[in-house]
Amino acid sequence: MVKGNLLVISGPSGSGKSSLMKEVINEISDSYFSISSTTRAIREGEIDGINYHFISKEDFEKDIDAGFFLEWAKVHDNYYGTSLKPILKELHEGKLVICDIDVQGHKIAREKFGNLITSVFITTPDQKSLKERLIYRGTDSQEIIEKRLANAVSEMTRIREYDYVLINDDFKIALHDMLAIAYASRKKMELMDLGEFISSWANID
Ligand code: GDP
Ligand code: ADP
Ligand code: 5GP
Image (cartoon, rainbow, N blue to C red; front, side, top):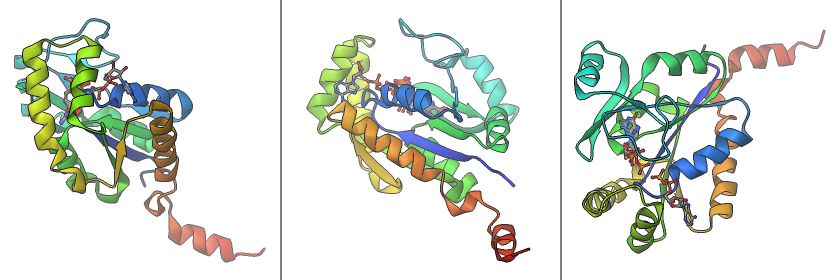
């Protein structure tokens, strides 16, 4: 019986996923952030093994063939993937496992884990503010920003596939709402052995 649950977050690059998750991980003690593997170049300020496992295209393809990934996808011309083993370990320990995956990855994860997943699509009030944030973050070239904005428009059409939509306008409000969703996801019925709970509840000895 799996005790933990999976919180999947998606949304356009620059919508605030990393900023929000950093706070959620600090706030919820039994949570675990799933570190994806990627073939994209490391950004200034990122740490290998903390933000991502930065690996070569060849190694990534070897891992695909070896069946290491719960899901993988090509996003903005780079490979991204979530390793299955660490997630299963943390789920069995009862943790809230948080995965930052794109819309393709969410679809696969949902097919594999069903209602064990709670999913949130994080976005900005409009495309203009997304562009401003990507420029403000200062980690990507003009060309890469344009690619991410184009991808954002197509990702936005898949919002309805998610349980929740979070518009990250005022950061404090968005964080408050994100924490509410994370805490509520822990109370899903699927997480409990209800049969055992109901029969032991009725036992008055
Ligand atoms: P950011 O969104 O600007 O922070 O850029 P990232 O490079 O961190 O993420 C790029 C894209 O890859 C996003 O759409 C992520 O949701 C997606 N992504 C990250 N990790 C994974 C993963 O393990 N699997 C899949 N399928 N997608 C991922
Ligand atoms: P993602 O992980 O989704 O790509 P980030 O967390 O890196 O997004 O956020 C992109 C940029 O926007 C960062 O510079 C971050 O500080 C900023 N940011 C995040 N949330 C807000 C907000 N509510 N208002 C203004 N700027 C924000
Ligand atoms: P970035 O390169 O800006 O960090 O991320 C770009 C996109 O890749 C984001 O939309 C992010 O959600 C997605 N992404 C990051 N890790 C994974 C992953 O493991 N799997 C999938 N499918 N997408 C990911």
